[in-house]
Amino acid sequence: MTGSESSVSGGFTRVWAGRIAGVLVCGVLGIAMVVLWRGVPQAVPERAPVASTRPAGPTVVATGAAEGPQLAQDPGPTLLTLNLKGVPGDEALTELAKQSGYMVEPIAASMRAAMKSRPVTLSATGRPFWPVLLELCGVLGVYPYPSSENRSAIYLSASAADRLKCPRVEAGSCVVTLHSITTTASVDPSGMRPMQREIMLRLSLLIEPKLKVFSLPYYAAVEQAVDDKGQSMVPEDSRAPGDGGAGGPWTAPIYARLTCPENPGSRIARIKGYASLTLYDGMESWEITDVLRARRRSATLSGANVEFRGLERTFVNYTAYFAVGAGQQEPPSAAPFLSPLRTVRLLNAQGEEFAPAKITVPEGRARGVFIHASFPRTASLGEPHKIILSVPAGLKELRVPFEFTDLPLP
Image (tube, rainbow, N blue to C red; front, side, top):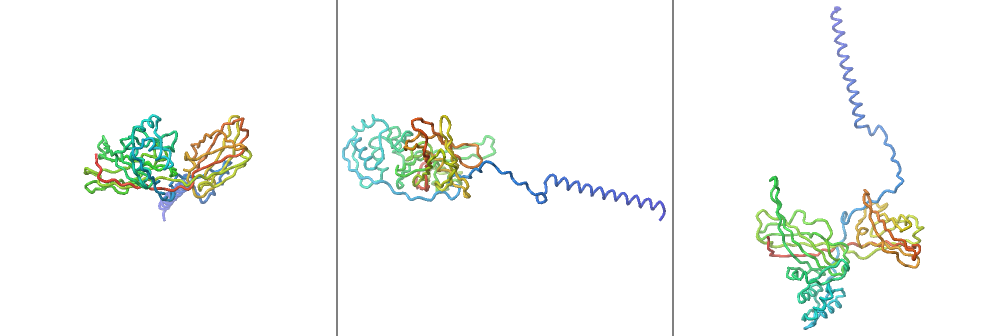
């Protein structure tokens, strides 16, 4: 091989060696960048988490998030037997209230005086409470009315007497009344979406006060709905969450949503569904004595672990702290502890009770339900001795069925 050939060959070899070295360097740099970007989880052991000085908050879910309450059987209506012939209206009302055991009163004292001049003739043998009361309301020109001051009382008002003409359905110890049907149309001004129509039925639910109502419905479940052309009007989601609006535990406004077919008929041939009430069996209570010196402790209420975290004393009040669901693997329902039925009472050694607690549920926590109950300090009562937390227990669902036929479609 000549000198020139050797020089060329050596240069060629050096060029390729340099290229190969460059590729290797780039590869190493690329791998290093990947390691820095993504990390190598299996090559580097994880750091042990720093122990928290605060106890972990309990995990709590809302009612119905798991299996939900069990189904309840309607106990049946309270049956009345009346034989009234020309009896003054106020006396007829007194007799009905006496037989039923419920507080049924005119909303104003002047109304009772006016009832004296209205004779009532009514015959009922073993008839349900609500139909008898509504028949009496028809004679007296009144209608059941709820009051926020006494939620267990049934007051009678003349302002809603026109509701007696609305169609209604008897269902055990309840009555479902249909008040109105409304059709609404939604239009997208951009023209990107077609017009949407929705039909809303407004109903009301009358519930016998003997039922222990935990929560009231807002929307009814629609099982079947067709127009007079046989077209289905059942929406994809026939139910919606939410509790009932204003009213006592014996009444609630409810709504039933329907979809409107593209070419609807002129009437709703049939609608069938039910309203779900949540009932409770009774109250469960937890008593803690020697409460000022009581250390952290726990108990089970309404299926949930509850932890008492102490009673704090300041110059002006006492504040008790509770945590719901502490240390519980299966998340319980928080609903009984958030219900207005829940109570926290503070008593001294003589059983005298401090003023009703101001109960708060702090917000801004990612997990758990915490209850703070504050009581004003009262010198005449001395030191507190016992605290009692009570919540509804034994939640069950009662389905109140209804069915209406041949309704006008606006």
